[in-house]
Length: 365
Image 1 (tube, one colour):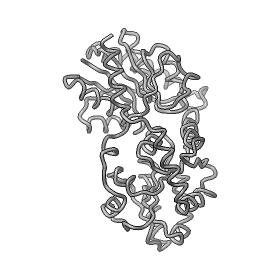
Image 2 (tube, rainbow, N blue to C red):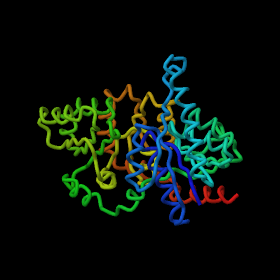
Image 3 (cartoon, rainbow, N blue to C red):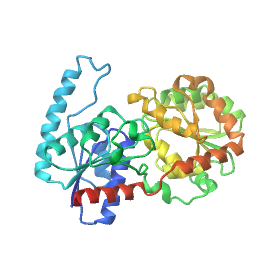
Image 4 (cartoon, rainbow, N blue to C red):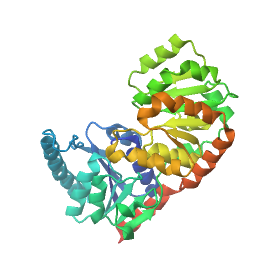
C-alpha cells in the first residue's frame, strides 16, 4: 500500500502525522509513505528525522485581512503548489491520502481529489479551520478529537478518534521524583512546568519574568522552557533577580520527563499540547494564542475549562493573573487531583491506531 500524508507547519500537525504513519506501519509493515509539506516549515526537518521521505511545496498561509494585496502572490503559490502536487501524486501513485492540517494539506488534497485518490481528514482542534471545512466536502472520513464537530463537517463522515500523541510520552514510567532528579531539579519540591513551544510564548514569558520573586517566595520550583526567541533575555532576568528555584532553558529535549516532573503545566492550547495534558492526566493552565486561526486555541482550552479539567487564562489577562492562578492552584491539591482526573476522562487512547485502520479501510474500498 502507498500512503500520501500532507500537512505540517507546527508540531501539533507534524507529530500526529508521524504517529499515524507509524501506526499504519505496525499494521501493514510493507506500506510506502510520502509526506508533502510546505517549504521552509519545520516538517521539512522533523519528518526526515523520523525516517520518512518528504517533498516541499511553495504554499503558505493567507495574510490577514484576506483582502491584503500580498494575497495575490499567496494565491499564485497555491496554484503552483496544486500543480506540483499533481505531478508528485502521478509519480507516487498513492492508494489513499491523509490530511492533518497546515498549509500543504490544502494543495495536496485538492490535487488528490482531482486525480481520484480518496482521502481522510484529521482535525485536531475543537474549532475547525476554513480550509478543513472545505476539504471535508470530498473526504471519505473525518477523524476528530472533540464531540460536537457536526457544526463544521458532514455528520455521516465524522469519527471521534481523539488526537494521536507521541508514543514516548505515554511510555515514560518515571515517578515525579525520578523525573525531577533526572532534570537536575529538587525531587521533593512542588514543580511548575512552563512550555510555550519552540519559539516560546511572549505573554507567558513576560508574566513569568515579572513574577520571579513571587514564585521563589511561594517555594515553587519552575522548569521554564522559554523558547528560542529572546532566550538569553529570560536567563539574564533570572540571574538578575537572584532566584534559585526558577530554571530557564531554551529547549526541553525530554518532554516525557518534563511532564512527569510537573504538578502543574502552563501551556498554549494548540491541539497537541491539550491532547498531551489529557492523555497524561496533568493539571494545566492554558493561555491561548490570540492570533491563532479562527481563535481555535481558545476553543480547545474552553473544552477543558468547561469540564473542570483546566484553567483558561486569556492572553491579555496573563500579566495580571497567570502567576496568581498558578500559585493558588499549586496550594490546592484537591483541585489539582480533580483537574487530573477530569482531563484524563477527555483523553482518547489509541487514536493513531484507530485512524490507521480507517486509512487502510479507505484504501481497500
